[in-house]
Image 1 (tube, rainbow over the protein chains, first blue to last red):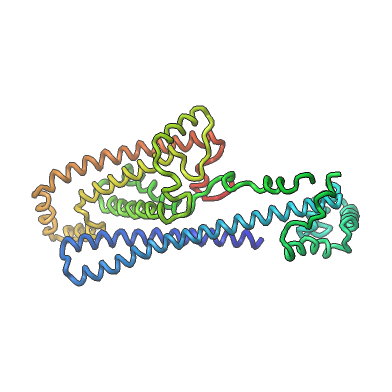
Image 2 (cartoon, rainbow over the protein chains, first blue to last red; image 1 turned 90 degrees about the horizontal axis):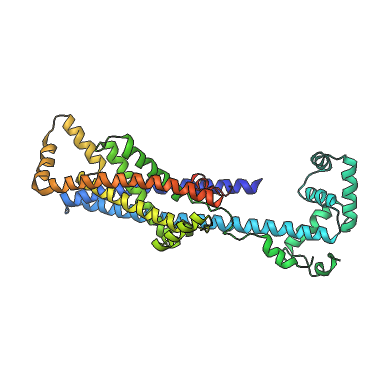
Length: 178
Length: 217
């Protein structure tokens, strides 16, 4: 899926940045050593002054690079956390809605698979059931949900996301546990 | 559902419950320094250009880790694992009773180990610098090449600094270098043992987050 691709790309990015930062630090440390050597040998020379300036720039680059990398890592983690919360919330909202519709366990499973985009043949294969059974279950799900078919069934949950946030509207509360 | 809202809160686990992961800078500097310690203490010849070069690379890695202790993400920062010897002892007591707490960063005993290793490595590096007169590996290689080409003047210069008082300093430095390096090796063994014991007690693999940085157990 594209979500995990994105994650992998970001992990690779932080790895490359970290590797670059390490190489840069090595260069900085070697140059600092060289500059100190020059300082002892001949502090007034233009060679020393130029090299000291270049080294200072390199060290500053390392420091800023470290802060930039930290920001990248933290942004990545924040996005990951937000994504997993959103995922968990959506799954829960769907589960509650299924409960409200009084779907049986089998219907819940089929409904979830249908929402994930699997077609009748795939669901039947996954569940080891006949296609006719799955088709009948889907029809019952649509009837309980009061939707016309698959598109409307999926749109039911997407609509919530697009509109007023993830939580279902108030009537969900009293209905189910009776 | 009777309690739909509290259930929502319980369903999303807190950030501290998952296994921690180390960022790439921590991991790369950790394994880089581990490799350098292995090479410089056991495998290569002390005083060779290779040995000195590895030492300088280790110096860079240590410097970066220290910078990262201020600039890095939360669990890599020194503030996340302050040196607290008393807490370290308490943690080891808890470990013996088999109920250690979990920490987002290093546990207090691990933190003390990290600081001790860093301090000893700094000593090894500083004494190494004294022994080589602070010359960079590039310069040492140049001088070796010059000597190989028949220009012995660098040896004369090096000999002179040796005579005017540098000699005893260098021998002391060499002694300290050797001793601190041996201590590093001992601490490394303790560190590995500590990770094994802690992993067993917590029932969670502490090595994986340092190897892959992954969230999976």
